[in-house]
Every structure is written in structure tokens, then in C-alpha cells.
Image (tube, rainbow, N blue to C red; front, side):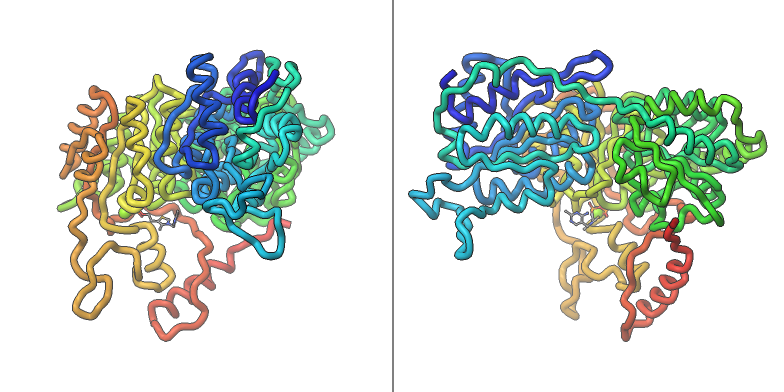
Length: 621
Ligand SMILES: Cc1ncc(C[n+]2csc(CCOP(=O)(O)OP(=O)(O)O)c2C)c(N)n1
Ligand SMILES: [Mg+2]
């Protein structure tokens, strides 16, 4: 079949399916693209031809920033439990490097995204092409080599004959739960437009089975050996529980064994917040309930978690002498962490087997009752934080409370950076495994709106609430325009607090006096401590085609959210919140180094506190 490389890519991807538990999905559900000379005649032309000749085979959407389109693809993939994703095409040079941050986010979070940055001429006759980085030491480097460390598979197709193996490897990595992340195939702009005679079988319907790896019996037996003597065990449920669709198996395991369940950011929603064995978020942004149990746990069962520093409170959360870990993970790399009893396997399969193997095991009543009491105490704290009546501006915890009240069980909350992810981790009452979508692997400012767009595209039947701070909004709000264009319904709650409240607090804790964290004019001393800036983000959102509602109190916010639920299109609810009103503490710690020498008393005091905090840090060897 004679097609250009661009046409062959589009045709190949339209024929790929994924399958797990007998259910098929499209591997690539659609395309995002921003065109330039690096892809307009290649993938751009190919997508046009697909739209005209085979509508629905490769649906195309515009984006406003290449980073945004990769975030949307990542949000889409996460919402679809990694069974489907979107492909992204960019021009060469800046269009391509704009995607690098998105690629890193996808890889850190282990979310499949497929990227096709355009690349410099393979023939080199016209070099240097516009936007080409020349390197006097070598002829075969381009800016696209920056994708290598942030991609789980990288290839550059210098010749058409290389395309089949690149595409097959791409699909293999995208559908492998262990390997998955960003897959990048750099396509030189001349090669994209070059024609070739392809074998028909390249475009055959292919089904990529997504494996449910069964644990090795000996590994399971070792885990059972550790678990059956556990007195105060605690489950740490990570994102792997949700991607594996193991939440029901987790609930049955917890109920059968009586082991309480704590959750990481990616794992939040693994167990409904009001389940008697749920103790909520664990770690630096956790609940005191989960953290108290973590401190005393003799066995920690990490399921589908990579034990980030937020989860382990920088390796201070699990403090019992001789604490042991049992780690269930598809990736041997994660299963081996903290010298744990490693069970390499799919979360659902492993939990089912473990439930059977531990049929005679049950925690003591007193332990479960204590977990329940701690969780109930925390729930009362949440209730208070939701209804502080803080004045003159509401506290952020009240904003979160109002959004939680407005959200129905299946609705999704989306967030990524700032002070809200921590507050949400502790405070959000999650009732559905896909109801909580906080990107906290890369915690990338600017993910919120673009990622929320991807979430809504993946789950049009759910209401999506995007919570975004003013800092994140200013970094990347432009995919609002894409949502408006595609008539995608989004409810964006924009929390204005004139700067980086989160980093302000962090700065204060390291003695750095909130330096550079508020959006302020310069004062008489030339410092950024004057009046707030006359920035009107509500007007900004309106100018982008969104419907905007301004709320100046929690009552108004509640009314606005009710109105937003009824409306269509993109609704931005703008609300001011007090940047100084903190959320209830987690009773936990996070390792952020403090200057070891300073003329400032604030820093010296912070350093003394820091050294104290460091003493609790463990290696878990
Ligand atoms: C791209 C990016 N740059 C910098 C950071 C570091 N950072 C984390 S939160 C934050 C401030 C976020 O401000 P805003 O969205 O207004 O939220 P707030 O802290 O006020 O809640 C910064 C600068 C980041 N996470 N991502
Ligand atoms: Mg802010």
C-alpha cells in the first residue's frame, strides 16, 4: 500500500486495540496537533485525509500549547485506567520541546502518551532548517534528543523502512503496565511526507493484551509469612490499585483481614472515604489518623505505590522498630523498595490470592476500633475545616468543602500543584475510584485545566471540577479555549490568593520569609512587598470565551456551583481565598533542606528544627 510515512502512522494507529478482561478499547482514541513546517505536510496532511476519507478513524483536535495537549493526553489516559490514550503531533524546535514537560509528567506518573515531535531534515540538504539547533560536534543531534530521558521508548525514524518497528515498539510499551509512560517517535519533516510501499499487514487490526501478571507462588508465600504474624498492619494503596481496577478486591481483602487502608495521592479513591476501614491520606499531606497508624505499624502493605517522599513523609512515616514492608507491584523496581517482601504482580490478581491465603488471619478488634475512632475524629476535623466561617475572605478548606458538597459521587476533582493538592489529599471525601484526579507525581503547575480537558474527554458522563490556583492559571490556562472550541463542559474553580500560598508557607518554614512568593508591586524599599496587582483573572477567563461567575463568599460559591452544574460549556467560578489560613495539620514531616549557614535568625531557627526533623529519617534496610 503506497502511503506517506505520516499517512502510514495514522492508519496504523487507527487499527490498534487494547484488551484486558476480554474488553477491547481503542489504543489511540484521537489526536491533538499544532502544525508548523515540521508536520504540516506530513502528519497534518495525513490527519486531513483521514478526516475526509475515514471519519472517526483518527479524530483530530487543536490545542493552544503543545505542553497542554500532552497533559490532556495524560489526563485522558489516567481516566481510562491506561487502556486508551491520545497521540500528539508537533512541529520541530519549540513546538517539540514544549512537549518535553508533558512527556516527563506522563513518564513520572506512568501514564501512556504517544508523541510525534517533528524533526530536522533527514536529508540535511537544506540545513540548517528554521528552528534547527546545530551542533558543531555532531550531525545527528536535534532538540528532540531531550525527550530521551523522559520517554520510556524513544525512536527517530530516519528512513521509512524503520517505521514498522518503531510503531510496534511504541504500542508494546504503551500497553505494558510496567514500562508505560511517554513514547516518543521523532519524525523528520521530510520523512513524514515521503511515500513508501507498505505491506498490508502493517495496518492489520491488532489487539494488545494488557497483562494481569500473576504473582509467583513462592513470593506470595513469603508475603503471607510476614503478614500472618502482623499485629498492627496498615495498607498503603497507591495508583496501581486504581489502574488495575482492584478497588473491589482491595475492599474485600481489607474486610476479610480487618486491615485499615491508607491512600497515596494517586491511590486516593481506592476505598470510599466513609468505609469503616478507611483512614484516608497517608504521609506529608496525610490525615493524623493514617499517620498515627503508620507510625506504629509493624507491617506496611504497599500496593501499587512507588513510595514517593510525600507518601513516606520523607521516610519518617513508618517509625516502628523493625517495621517490615510487603510490596505488591507490577514493577519489580517498586516491589523491592524499603527491603520489602516483594510480590511482583497485578494488584487485583495478587489481592484475590492473598485474601485466600490469609483466610485465617484477622486483626484484633481493639486495633480496628482504634482505626475507626481515629478516622471518625479526623472526619469531624474535616467537617470543621469545611465550615470555618473564616472572614473577611473564606479559607481554602471552605472552598474545598463547598466543591465537595456540590460534587456528586461520580464527579471528578482535578488538581496538580500549589496548596490545594495537599488540602485535597487530606480533606476531599472521595466516593468513587475515579473521583479524585490530582497529578502529584510531577505536580506540574499548568496541568489542571489541560489535564481536566483530557479527563472530561475520557469521561463525558461525569462532571469535572478543575481546582486551579492563580499561579497555575497564569502558567497555563490556554486550553480553556480548546474546551470552549470543542464544547466540552468543565467547571473550573479558580482560587485567587495573589501568589504562591503553598511556597510562601514552605518558604516561611525554611526561614526564607515568603521571599518571592506573593504577586506584589515593589514597595518604597524596592522589595516585592507592596500592593497586590490589579490582575483580573475572571475577566481573563471571560475573554477566552468562558462563562464566568464571581463568588465573594462561600454562600455565593455554593450558588455559583449549582448554577455551573446546570450550565453548558466552560464555566469558571472565580473565588478569593485567604492565603494565610492553613488547613488542619497532618502530624507529619517533609524533607526540604534548610540553609546550613545564614545571618538571618529565621533561617538559623528553621535549621535547628530541620536537624531535629532529620533525626526521625530511616533507611528501611
Ligand atoms: C511548573 C512548575 N513550576 C514551579 C513549581 C513549584 N511550585 C509548586 S506550587 C507553586 C505555586 C502555585 O501557586 P498557585 O497555583 O497560585 O497555588 P497556591 O500555592 O497559591 O495554592 C510553585 C511555584 C511547580 N510545581 N510547577
Ligand atoms: Mg495562589
